[in-house]
Amino acid sequence: MRRTLAMATAVAVFALAAQTRAQHEEHAGAHQAETLGTVMFENTCLPTVGASFNRAVALLHSFEFRSAIDGFEDVLAENPTCAIAYWGIALSYWGNPFAGARSTDALRAGLAAVEAGRNAGSPTARERAYIDAVAALFENYSTASQRDRILAYERAMAEVVRGNPDDMEAKIFHALALNQTALPNDKTYAAQLGATAILEPLFAMYPDHPGLAHYIIHAYDHPPLASRALDAARRYAAIAPSAPHALHMPSHTFTRVGAWQESVATNRLSEQTAMRQGGATEALHAMDYQTYAHLQMAQDRAALEVLNRVPSVAAQFDATAITGGAAPPMAGFYALAAIPARYALERGAWQEAAELTVPASGTPFTIAIVHFARALGAARSGHPAEASGDIARLAELRDRLRQALDTYWAEQVGIQLRVANAWVAYADGQREEAIRTMREAADAEDATDKSAVSPGPLVPARESLGEMLLEAGDATAALQAFEASIAKEPGRFRGAYGAARAAEAAGSAAQARGYYEKVLEIARDADSPRPEIQRAKAYLAEGA
Image 1 (cartoon, rainbow, N blue to C red):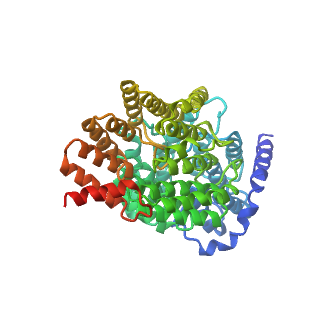
Image 2 (cartoon, rainbow, N blue to C red):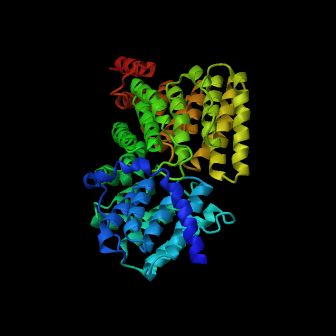
Image 3 (spheres, rainbow, N blue to C red):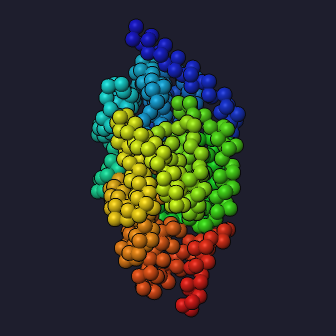
């Protein structure tokens, strides 16, 4: 009876998934032209499905989850007793391990795949261990917290490795599971470094494996570690150029080190590839990173071109999809809110920011993006009273996240609320309170880390502190704040320019010259005559 019910549940869930599969059928004939890297996953399925199985695992390693599910289902269509294929389907329904909460539909689908795998064929002890491990992510999802289930999964994958010490794939998936357990406020980066200790020796031996390059980038995606990922970042796109996420993922590293042109180039390819494959959400995610990079280089016209492409891509965005590429629907909502907000804030177009349209749908923290930008714009354009409604809404959204036990995003929205309150207080003449509040926001932001969904904060709080201190006439403290922000967010145009102005105001000509030179270096390919660039050129000309 248990087997019958499990299979019936699986059929129902997989029928739901089949509704979205039709759009991917047109790509089926292109498999021969694909380049996804080299994967060899040992299994006891029919030899005739071996290539298809390895292709599906390669897609899974590049977080192309919908395509991976299609691939595993192709395997099962030819070999219905291939139990380990259900493991791949379940892990694909889990989706991006660095995303937030999963939908109930995705959790049900993953659990159904687990049950189907447990009741299919005669898997080996190793294959059963994989299936039992992924089950930890889905079982008891209504009673056990996601954090507890993630920790249980990591422990289970560690057991798979202990039972199969020669299984390279087990080691790779365990490293990813280990990285998934990392907390954003753990500045020892113990989990991430534990993951790279597994991954890097394997990458040296298997340089064409997509998961190794991909997961090294994720593990080092933190300011003090990012430069260590440059080799993997510059190789991953060439390993799996048929996967949109493999084309996007290097930009996580490029963003961390301020390699803006490389970020633009790889994200443009990711956007184009995603759209050819029907992946609007992945395209929007790449477009957010593109916009951020263009704006750092003062390429405002290019950023506007990205912004102008958003409506056509958004028209294809499916917010109800239970699985897709690496970018979950939340990432689509994030990009739709962040791209216009960045375009206004990075240019200092405060009135433009104050007039942004609040999205009609999204998650609490994506809607908060626009309320934050509007509040900041109102305060900095000299209309602090007009920020009151957006500030009240930010507080409501933060509280909703707290009630939902989404502690990470509640904290991020809380930081935005502090930054907005600080600028309102400053505009109202309460300078001491404003600076104190902004310091609290900067300290809180430094103690955590950005989500992988974003190239960076809408406005780095410590950079904002520097701008406030500079306006208040404390150039020395402002310079310290800018330099601390630059250490965390290198290559930011506003950070370098703020440091230059602060050094100039503090009477440190050598430092001012160095930072103004940095501004011009960052903006060497600018397509906009920003006044900051003109000021940098004028200062350097005066000292020539």
